[in-house]
Amino acid sequence: MTDKQRRIQALIHSIITYLQAHIAATRGVDLTLDKLAAMDMSDERLIDLPPQGTRHDEVLKNAIAGIVAPELQDIAGCLKAAKDDLIWREDKAQFYPPGADLGEGYTKCNLHTLLIGPDACGHHHPDFNLGILCWVHGRCIATTTTTRQSFI
Image 1 (cartoon, rainbow, N blue to C red):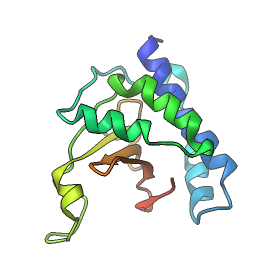
Image 2: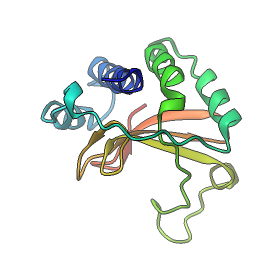
Image 3: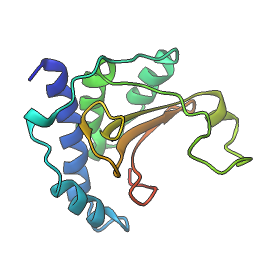
Image 4: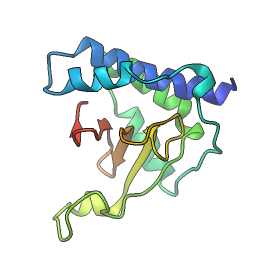
């Protein structure tokens, strides 16, 4: 396993640890953890794809630096360490109904990276996504799209 893969695996595990600690806080977290537990996320199954940076690197750095909640520090540290290892993409509103008002901040700059999913840089899964979404207002959240709900 490469150093890059170790950092991505650490980021995934930091999100799982957070979810386990907050299982009762948000509806659906238990379902997400069940799905994750059923996956083979061994080191041997890690995907090794080349990273893809972003033209919004400064926004991304600021968003990560803006994660200040004590309970998110492990995720923030892992995200900072893995930032340049991930595949960052911009959303062109493909995840929303046509004509949805997403707001200027979202349409101006948003980034996401899939850690688990069909086009992920961590682990492949055909029908489950786990990733990080960041937007211009400098906020990052971990998302899963089995149910299209955000948990962090």
